[in-house]
Length: 419
Image 1 (cartoon, rainbow, N blue to C red):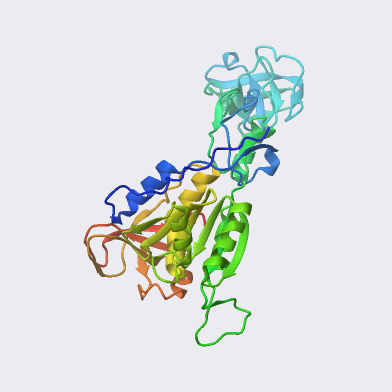
Image 2: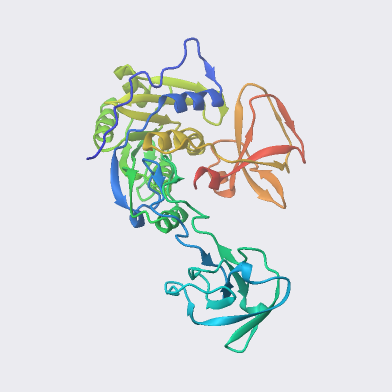
């Protein structure tokens, strides 16, 4: 049976009374506290589960390895059979190989030929490397004494049957599929893929293939956000581009609510005459215009359209991408049923100088050169090329700060945002 979670509450984006400029950390905390998964649950084969989100904790179906085995090619014997110094042990007939166990116990004082991955034959507990022995085919000679259990793997030393191996909310990597399969797990419960709709608004926008005038600009946001959503493993619903018209925006949002679990819009999210996304959300009674104390960005329109969460991003491509990485990424992950995702940053010396005022958090397009962090020549959010120049962002804190060459700054690579 497919499980469907309850809808979000109408007040999930409401800000505390008296809030004006909201610090980034507070905005993120509110999103984390109030958003819940909106995706259902289904069962899929482990082999088909790459990048899906695990819906329930998963336990090992059997131990790994299931039996004590050998880690090298060599000879297995009982540790109690040898002492210190030169040793000679008779060989039993046959051998043990991976997938072909030896059928009989090995008597005390004897050894048996074993290959890497073979189950340790009964009566043995240690293995001597092939290179550390001499043999005439009847016996082996080597120098003792080995440590008990030398060159072997214990049964279940990696995973024990019945123990939890992966927790709910994890987005499954190729390595996870290997782990699950090694533990004998064939099927798992995962979240349905989150469906994310994107919408661009603005009379001035054109697609790159369209004819333009001096009054037009190309819609950079949709191809950029399409790629981001696909990279994060969500299903994309492209609502296209609509003009600055209340009816056009409402029609597009209607389609988004019918076909998607969340909607990202760019443009029209502030409080101006042509900000029709904000106006449409305001009419539902769920509109919350978060004035986030950050640069670039600041206005972030949030609301519900027919029960579907809408994230109104700035229209400027630089601000749109940075707001998507900082806010939409963890919020969408939580809606999808995944763990909240704080990006991993690294403290590195700056290769630039900057004086920053207190009161807002700033994100600079940046890249690493020779172990130091360079920033893009212009901080203007209209310089879209800086997104390609950069390999990540420098995050400067809310407090006043003077950065000089060599000052430690927090660098967050694009990879930490899943890009």
